[in-house]
Length: 307
Image 1 (cartoon, rainbow, N blue to C red):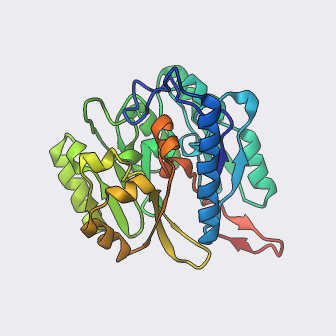
Image 2: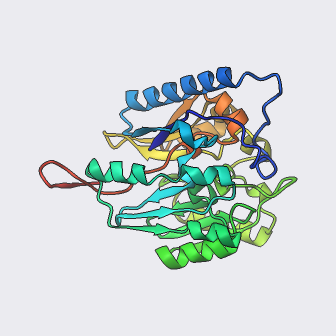
């Protein structure tokens, strides 16, 4: 699921916690930036379509004034069990992104939704958890990997764990400031795992994480801090209609790969990248942030359940 933005901008409420985000210059033309972002978004959607990767696009709503609507993975997760989880967001501007009309439209389209768990009340307690930005979900083994930050609190993780029966693997990662979202320093797929181990300050946990991922049979790729800053870990492994596996990332991220790393990936999955430099520069997020996976089952016209 993707959201085509209408109010894209650099969010001043998140600049202090997001080291990947750049402030708009006074001389910047916001209308020109938004036009470029729309072009980058459309191109990404077209590339996904060309490769048979199913996706649903919803339009942002003008009146919401949400600068980060392009990143829906932070406010919702959609689970195979039929559960929808809504998340507490640190930025008040981002709280407007939670849209019940989208879940209704998904239901109208045949996706089976059995219940909604709304964790947004945690915002009033100063506790935050921003979806699959804050957590890397191993949905098969029901385990969530998360680095603690101002936008990912241990208390909110505990509430999610109890509600969804997930085991939490939490740690702290930092450069000059705490890493704002786990998905900029770690990516987890069926076949690949990209991790910037250098920013994990608890070395015992870093070693444990590396062993756990290696023992799972995944190809574990160690990402440098510089590569992380090029959004290399902000990638997502998906399958297309022909059951072919792709690792999706930005063009900037792909250009940061070494020859050896690229071979490790291509030995397991196909690599597909998208040029989205304006989205990355002013939004502070990349390809993975733009994608909210829809794991809900779908009822076909013949009443046959589809994955």
